[in-house]
Each structure stands twice: as C-alpha cells, then as structure tokens.
Image (cartoon, rainbow, N blue to C red; front, side, top):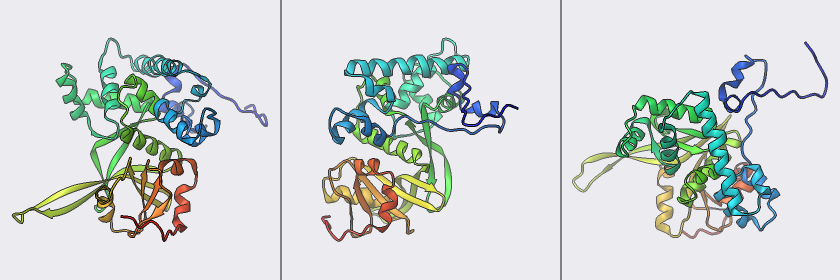
Length: 323
C-alpha cells in the first residue's frame, strides 16, 4: 500500500455516482465521509460585495448558497445557472442512476415538494396530489422516488417527535431543500413565501452546525363550550439535539403584536422541561428575553454568529418586556 505524507487523494466517478449517499459503501469502512453543503449565510455574507447584510439576505434567500453565484453579475445569469444545475446535474443524474425512462413522476414530485416546503407530507398525500393532476402513482412509488431525492442530497427530511411522549411519529414528515436557490429556481422564482424560505434556511443552518433536527409535536387536551374533551396538536418547528445540548426553536417571520407572540409561544409553554427555548424572527430587533425566559432573536444574528445558540445560555436581558 502506497503511503505519502501531505497528500490528499480524491476519487470520483460519474455525476450519477458522486451525488449518491451510498458512495461510502464503495470503500467499505476504509474512508471518511465529509458532507459538503452549499455556503451558509455567514460564508456567503463574508464574500458578498454588493451591499450590507440585509442586501445579502435578500440575495441569499432568493438564489441560495451555491458558490459560483458570487461570481455572476445579473439576475438572469444566476437564474440560468441554477436552472441548468438543477436539470443537468441533479435531475439528469437521478434519472440515469435509477434507470427512470420516460417517467414524469420525478418531475412532478420535485414540483410538489418545492411548493410545500415546511408543510407536513407523506407518500399517500403526495399520491393524491398527483391524482388530482391526472397522474396515477402508487404510494410506494412516491416513497421510492422521495428516497432518490434524499439520496442525491437535493432534499432533507425532518421527522416528527412527540416531545411529551418521547417517541418518533413515522408519518407525515417535513421536507426541506438543501439549497433554497435550487428550490426557487425550480419554481421559476414564482413562489417566494418568505415565511417558509426562512424556515428552510434555519433548518439547513442547524444541520450544518451538526444538530439532529426534528419537528416537535405537543399534545394537549382542551374542552369546548359543551365541556367535551378534545386533543389538539401544537408544533415546535425544530427540536435540535447534539450530545447533551437541546434547543427548542420556533421560526416566526414576524411578531407584530402581543397576539402573535402568544401564538408563537403556545407550544413552548407546554413543553415542561428546562432546555433553552428560542424564537427566531426576521423583525429587526435586538436579542432579548421575555418574562417566560424565552429568547427572541433576529434571524441574521442567529445565522452570522456561529455560536449564537451557546451564547444565549448565559444571556440575561432585563429590558424590553414589551408583550
């Protein structure tokens, strides 16, 4: 066996192979897997020369973090680059690798997932969406095709976790795109809901920081006007775990009034443990802590400070009890 100091050897195959998550099996334990993500917002911002961090956010939330974008000048160039990347690298490779011939299912599936980032989905629900558009596809086929997209690192899956019951719920899931620019390009930049895009970016950032990220579910019982008991489900956007660390995070695009704050806190109020609870918003607000101990911070502060979550452990703010 040849051993050379200070030498890195990179072995790749066809595009349809190097995108595959099972490439590690080719080396059978004789190598390490390093996942290379698109640029984080902090990385993107460090190389962005066309404005301040708010301009960078507008650019990043539209075109994503593919490094080559920083060398392109016009919106047309950026859109063309992302569209070509999506079609000629991702989709083409997925089709070739999995021998999908003359099949519209993969295209339709990508569109459905792109339209529904941040929404609960499962193969049965997606198959019904297909049927409403005149495409008959079995649940099992949809599930298989979703796995193809996951295998190519085009999308990521977040599983629901019952916080009080301490168990996973197998279905439905949430799917996020590994790069929001690719997602936006797929939809020809028509559907730009900033709420869901911000949620997708926060999810990707947490994954890049090494957290295992789930969608939290809280069950609680309420009584109606007749005294009848019903069970409701509240959602915590992200339950983030890494070693002994855990954070509960809500993504709230804007909190304009006290009513919205109550809504965003509802699920956090019922968790019942002492792990840090954080609400991330796009509102231009300084970091502060409310009377319940929940921390409210701006999304750019969260993204630009690598240790932003850890710093909050010792943060105490006696100000801005405005709600």
